[in-house]
Image 1: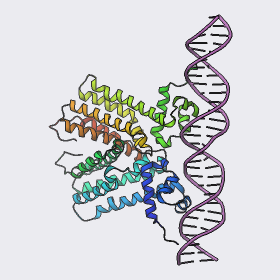
Image 2: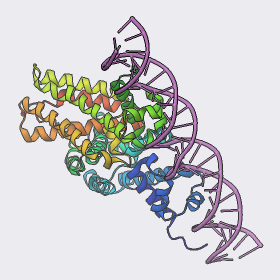
Image 3: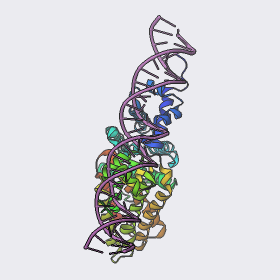
Image 4: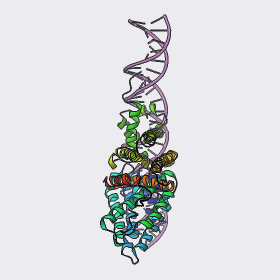
Length: 193
Length: 193
DNA sequence: GACACTGTACCGAATGTTCGGTATAAATGG
DNA sequence: CCATTTATACCGAACATTCGGTACAGTGTC
């Protein structure tokens, strides 16, 4: 076969970008075609299931990302604090310092949430769970760790919403900075939750 | 002239509901028509500017709501704690205990954000400002009050995103419960931010 | 020649929007 | 008090466009 101009991975990356920016309903085939440089037929060659399969491929890509940058760091060497640092750096770059939206958020809002909800559910759950594991490992009580992990994801998501609405990446930067110091704070110190 | 079946206010309320549920692109005229009981052309009688004007009417309605339930309570009698209680109750019911999405969030995600961004910006800003005023009044330092107010809105928005993704209203309930006790905590106590 | 891929043309359905027209109720005028 | 006008509320049907999706005839590589 001719060398593809774009690897499948690269194609999916561009799909992800469009879905993040425009949402599921807003991401028309024309837009997806323009963004990938592929004609309609080529898109349907790679994704016979059409737009829905493209969105699922985008979600696959995100799961892959989470595997790499959230779950794997749990098993890597280093203190919990060091590994948290790496995770937050990865999130910072994933969301372009608060300037780009979250694919999960994009799919949560928008009329086709039900199409993807099982996957959204799973993604959010493993996200929280990975934070939780890290916090527990830092010596925090399991119950507190659990709610602290949820709060962390809540704050990141909320910050992204606010950044989009305010057209200002301040909230995201502040949340991330705070999480860096607050997420692993030890039991004696009650200054964070 | 004929008696209207629905007051304009009632019509807008139903439009709001559809936009919240489906987003701007997802809210088709057929859907808006079905929800209001008005034919497509009748909708254009009320909103000559079409779908965009309908969404703006929805945003007007939200501004009205904020005026009533966020800004007015600032000037009402009662301790800051009492007034905060009322504000959070109002938010709890606005979002149906976490089961319904935020119109602002819905418009932030979705490809037509730029159409509404000035209004989104203003809404988020006054929301934060109203919290801030309440916190300051409770005797908290202005700088801390500011960031605490932002965090509160961040957490509410994030919780709503998570509730949608997880199909579970737990996060919203927990955030609201925490805000009830944490938002006005006095300077000596550093247990919240 | 088999295979992976792509461009073109096309489909039915749905999109947002507009037009022509009807029904009703209040206001107007005698 | 009645007839006529006028303003409003609404609908059905059609508008052009775009939607997601398909059929097919290639093209270029192994």
